[in-house]
Image (tube, rainbow, N blue to C red):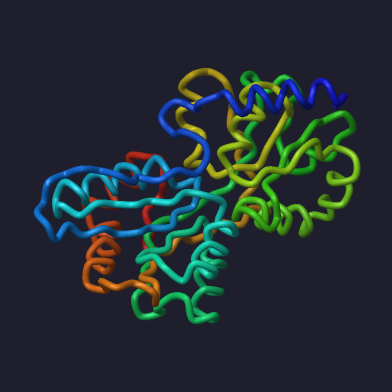
Length: 272
């Protein structure tokens, strides 16, 4: 891609709002519900790809309990770094269990206050109508196919994409010949394929519903034997100052009502 085209694409990406799931990280901060002088706040770190469901879960929990929800969204690697560095926060819910296991090992999260809530299933996302006839991971390595991937250090889908492509012997070839851009969040990948910057990306199945409904993209299933399905856990952090309230939100996210919200937003509830 020429420098001028890259600049234009970057400007477009910065301007686009994906309807129903706004890209990027922001806070649910500054809500002014009047619940008395002892208003309580929960600080939650969430993977950016979970935003649709987490927005709804946070809103429902606020309405039911009167608690103000601060939800910080970002790539899983980024929010892990924020938790580790700031040493503050109540609940952690990344895009893959790798970050939860690491958080438990490093003493950031309670293992006995961790619950699996849903699955994250990768798929290939292509431009509407699939003009390049991309049907498999192998097609991402075809000459002339423009690919975007999540950053390996920044987001769960990036780390998983690398692992999945390496297992098929494709990663280095794609990186050398077809990789146009890497991103910090899965939401940026959605934007790249929707505006035609690239031909294909690897994202989570639950991220694609709105764009498909708008007729901007098509999803291509990854062959089950080559796919890697991840589990999304929700954990109480060791830095919480209100463990009971943090656990209450964790339990709400895993409750019947919570699971219905996950499912309504395209996620497959955990069946373990």
